[in-house]
Amino acid sequence: MIALLIHLLVLFAILGIAALALNLTLGWAGLINLGFMGLVSIGAYSTAILTTLHGWPMYLGVILGMIFAAIASLLLGLLIRTMSGDTLAAVLLGFNFTVYSVGLNWTSLTRGPLGIPGILRPELIREDRFFLILALVLFGLTLLIVQRITKSPFGRALGAIRDDELHARVLGKRAFRVKLITHVISGALAGLSGALLAHFIRFIDPASFFIPQLILVISMVFVGGLASTRGTVIGALIMTFVPEIVDIATNLPSATVGALRAIIFALILLMVVLFRPKGIFGTVELPSYADRD
Amino acid sequence: MLTATNLKKSFGGVAAVDHASCTIEQGKITALIGPNGAGKTTFFNLLSGTIEPDAGSIILLGEDLTTHNAEERARHGISRSFQLSRPFRNLTVAEHLLLALDDEDDQFWKSLFNDGKRDQVAMKRVHEVMKMVGLDVPASHAGADLSYGQGKLLGIAMALIHPHRLMLLDEPVAGVNPVIREAISSILMKLREEGETIFVIEHDMGFIMPLADQVIVMDHGKILAQGTPEQIKRNPEVLHAYLGQQL
Figure: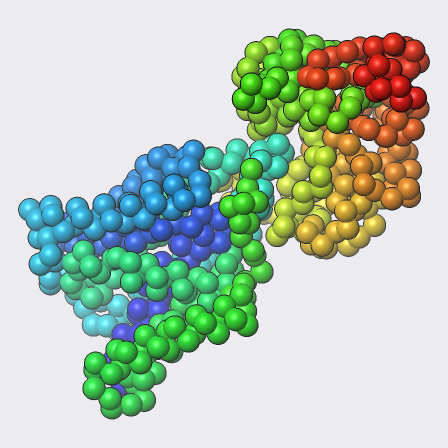
């Protein structure tokens, strides 16, 4: 029971980092980043390849994972500069598929569908309970960073650009630069969550970072509330723990538990959409594409 | 102060602004009038950089801004309000004004290590400007919940608080009640006394003619005339454009 609780708490911390990173672009910048799991994947594969296949230390693997994901995010941000609406959504989703395909087909680097097993953890955090401390500290740091950014004048400019980019530009706000910086920070944090996940689960394959995981992280953001750090924490907590209740509280066979988890997951989303459409702590409404100039 | 020369902008085959030239004098209120569809707002969009001209040049205090985008022009001192009130839906009134005032908020590191003192000092200016334009709502009020008239006042307040050399106001009294109309009239007079340079589009002749030092008339994308209100009222071309309406 304690082992399961520790496992879930680590997942909460890691997915919480991912949800905060996604909320930075989705909630505060208003960009529906469907390419997000591609960035998480880059962070995870970078550290897995460097530490497991080349013997680098974990801290260097994690840092480089963040840097590679940030660079990918920068390039993606430059690529989507002039895009909007359906084109933007398709390109971002396409980025996810591209990273997935590279992971699947570049077998000399990623071992393809076999994935990378036995990803190492340093002696100090080999046990889950010590890994939990690391994950919670990094989650706390991420929370502080996101809060600092979004409560700063930069965050205010970011919110204005999300609400009405043309108006913000007329006030002298360099919209592209603000969005790009946010996108890069979000990418680095996505890389961090991916790297931590790789070292925690100790196995990754291309399917570890694909559409179901994207839906999970997006759901955390929507349940907690757009542009809300408090909401993101609550969203991550709910979406990590509540579907596991059936596993903890019942002795049902695993096939049934899996289906029940999915039903509970869907029910949570449905309740939020019906009764708290902005999310539990959300105050922000995203402008529809039709509103945009 | 500002010279626009031969500005041209076409949408499809239609020339919305057709080789329009004019000069805005420093410290004066210049009105831009003309029938609906004359190209006035397009002209403002060209001046503020929200659209690019097909041809022509825009010089502000000797500096060529023609190729500058909207944010660069704003940073060179062109502030503007919009015809329709368009508050940011998730910002408070104070945040709107702080946003307009702060020209360093898009600098990431500077902004991140801001200790909040800058905003504290800025809030004094925010309250001053709110009082000046008669925006009588709490600073914490959501911008999206303002009435239309209050939204117009907020738009003027933002154009005013934004560090600027030239203010462009697009139909500041369109759709507002007589009380706010009078308030805006008083604000503009006060600003002129303070030496502000204001270029304003307006349909309401009773409002703008007593205020304006210079009037520019536009029709079918062209500048028909530029002169004092008295000269414009006597101009036969202008009278024809307005189909005999009395100015």
